[in-house]
Length: 503
Image 1 (cartoon, one colour):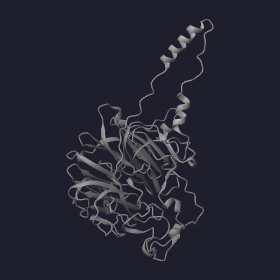
Image 2 (cartoon, rainbow, N blue to C red):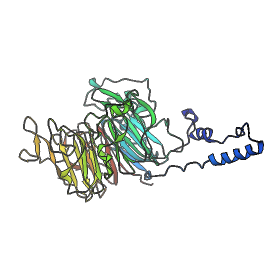
Image 3 (cartoon, rainbow, N blue to C red):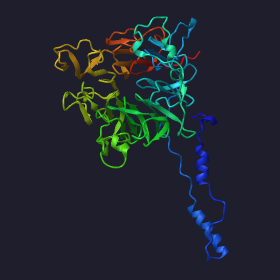
Image 4 (cartoon, rainbow, N blue to C red):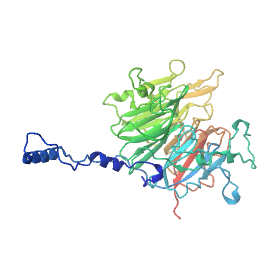
């Protein structure tokens, strides 16, 4: 991590270590009956016996990516989640920081050396090549991990015209401290810490270190509002705090829950438990309120058995998955549109409370999974692209889901509502997938990026506010000739990234 500035007020971890463990210079305590020579000999021997070598430093188990990225953003952006600031910019100041219909490079991130990003519901977290953590977007519950107080303008969102014209300047009332990428306050994170991964939920952010530690900040929300961060008494964590897990190699966040995969293949979960997304029983006894509410990390139920091990994890808004060593997928959580991979829906089957094999994927070995609010998209190790779940807004990427298909679930009006059978999409050689609330994305072997789904706020990046029923390539002038290596999405926005082009 970069050297700290004194203004941050962070005490040095090295200073604390020295004060706690430095050997004492004063003489050893003397025995009343022993002679001086014997006392000295015994004291020296005792000191030699008690003086131990310092423990070895924690092993490095994670590596950060090194490829610097150009970051392209699209979507509504009225809450600063595009990270474009709150003023016009570009040639003749013609570009507005909101309502970006197609991918546009984020000029405020050029030269920052971003190597990794994660999309929350309305905020973004990024890691740079020089080990800095940047955030932007909504900070109502501390998700940005820094002070963004601004005494500027306010907005009446309900009074705004959805069809803003070119003269509209309401974006000037967006908080510039939230809408401009800024470095977090590192809080309890020790100097010298190396970051290797970032993750974001709807109202919280997390980082993983090279040694497998996890730090986080923000809050979790349940059905009745804020439930807290790590404990119910801590409604909002504004700066990073250490999460009580070790040896973590991967994180995945839903809207209000987190999955963590450790080096032994165990999956830890914490956050809001209301839809079964934690995959374990929440204790109702004991003094630990964090455990009683799901806010304290604990091992997912299935991993109490030693033979169970995961190699990858994924989340939707309220559902979760892991992949085992054989490539098989287990799902749990909210299943009201079959998004957790089970056919049963309706009363008694709305939630899957413990991991259950997704049998319809048994003949495939999975490479990547991503979940939206009510749908799931995956790609196999053979490059096959599959999707299932809610289908009334184009989420599954199939426009031919007709009334007669036996694997379609219909709503009360007889209209297609969801599909429980994974649908094969016509994008061969798929290598990566991502999902927003009701949108999906895929990258193929030629580094082309495709999108489909709900697009009312231009979150598909295709320049339309109509639903996109089938995958279409995003190929505007900004990215047409670029090799896209990452894509992510939030509620009303999306991001694609390509390696920086050396001039």
